[in-house]
Structures are given as structure tokens and as C-alpha cells.
Image (cartoon, rainbow, N blue to C red; front, side, top):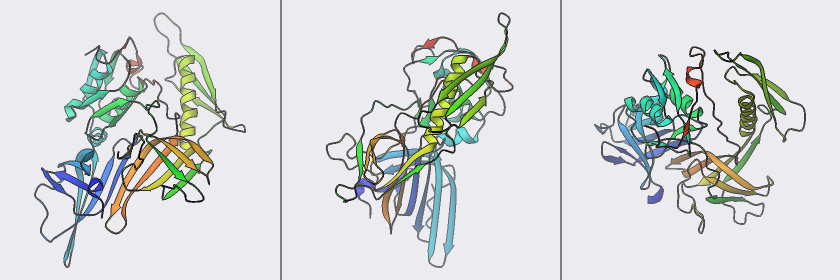
Length: 373
């Protein structure tokens, strides 16, 4: 049985439900909607009235909220002497993924204004722009067929940012903070002394890695300037030991600097995909007396020191994703997905769209958050 600090419960209609048989709770900075699923064993006919599809849910571990969202699906299985209830859902990003963006055109708008116009009509009111500065966009045009998530990510990427939902349901538009101190140290030694991981797997791949990436771009002509079709920028992966070149054509790269930034981003993305540590630890909270993370829940965005003698690892890693799992028979466990530190980078990437012909790519004045709107 889990300790009170790690007991998972669902708050639905003001009532906590914690008599589960098993659960999974996912959180991944690169996956649009975090998801959860729980299986309950109930007496026959005891399905609570408040448990309906679409009901608001708060997922808790102990007294800490880890996710706010809604029930997506309900599955009931009734057999002789048993009644099993399965619930699953996602966080606040679900409605942005599933639904169309509000159609609008706006001029001279800040990122905060754009985000608000996209998400507030869908019921999302808690918004945080976590950036030192953002761009005032000359013109933004959201057209029929755009999902709210696509419109949101395009606006975020134009500023070199990325959206996700905090545990309390706040929409955050920001990026990784590599200045944070590591919250814990994961240890695997051959002697077993000090080991605090159940397992540690390392996956390395060259499938998406290249020795050099070259991006070819173009700039459309204007009333004062002629178009340019020979724009190019390159970036090299110094970790590749043999020739694996890649040439990418990007119609949205309209300057040499943008071509170079895109090439650097593609090299970084390849490195991100090419190296993954997967650690399994007991429980859902960090046990690191004397460390800043002691007692905290494992949360994507944390930085973690890893020491593994068998793998030859002694370095800081970035926690990209984590999964809480539990069952009455197997106890509680957390799976941590770790990436190389400082490899996940977010570059400004305006999206023009093949029907917009650059309307969404016009940048302008850089402002501090809160200066506009």
C-alpha cells in the first residue's frame, strides 16, 4: 500500500476517489496533452453520479495536484460478483488538440494577446508567458481548419517558446531553464552501494543524426526588394565521426541567419532523439536528504545528476518526461525519461502557412512581457 504522501486520488465533483486497483499518470514536455488512467473495483451498482464523461478532474498524489483536466472515457465491466470501472482523461491541452481555433485576424499584437484570443474562448483563463521578451506581431491570421493547439504552437514557436500545462492547470508558454540546480542524484554502482534506481537503460541511435545539416531557404520579393533563392546555412554535429550529410529545403527560412538557426535546431533535434536514459525508481517523490528536491514529486523540467558505473555516466541530465504507475500488487513506481542537458533548444520559428503567404511571419518590435495588452 502506498504511503499517504504517495496515495493517488481523483477529485471529481468535490469528492476524492482513491480506492484504485491500478493507475498510470503521464507527463511529457514534448507531448501536447498529459494523460492519466485509473482502474477501480466497485461494488455492483455503486457508480458515483458525478463520474460522467467530460467531468472536471483533479489528479492528486498525496496533497499535491499533478494534473487538472477532464474525463475522456469511462469503461464499465460487470461480471459475477465484480464491477470494474476504468477512467481515463487528459489535461487542459486536450480541448486545444481536439477543437478548432477561433477564427480571427489581428494586427500589432503581443504573444500574450494572441494566446488569450486562441485559448480563452475554449475556457482556459490561467495563462503565464514565461519569457524575458516576446515579439509584437505585425499581423496574425488564424484560418478555418486550424486546431487551437496548432495556432498556439505556431505563436509560441515564432518567439522561440513552447506551450505546456502546469499541474494546477495554468497554460505556460516558455522554455527549459538550464540554470536550475539538479534536484537529485541517481546512482547505479556495480557494488550496489548507494544505488537508488531499480533499473537504468540507455538508448543511443544515429537514425536522426547527421554530420552536417544544410538548410536552403528563399525570400519572397517585395515592393522594395527582389526575391532571393540562394539562401543557405549549415551546422555541424561534432559528435558524428563519419560523413552523414542532410540537405533540407525550408520555404519559411527567408534569411541566411534563419537558415543557420534552422540547421542548428535540426542538429539539436537529432541529438535529442539519439540519446535517452530511462530510469525506474521506487515511489513518486524524490528521496534526497540535503538536496533541493527532497520530498518533491518527480516533474518534467527538473535537472538530475546521474552516476552509473556500468554505463560510464557521470553527468547532469534533463527530465523530459515521467510516468507514475501503481497497482495494489506491484506498489508504486516512477519511470523517468532523461535527455542530454541543454540539448532541447527552442529557436524562433515563424510559421507562414502555405495559404497565408507570410501573414503570420511578420515580426516587429521586441517587448517585455506585460508591456503590451
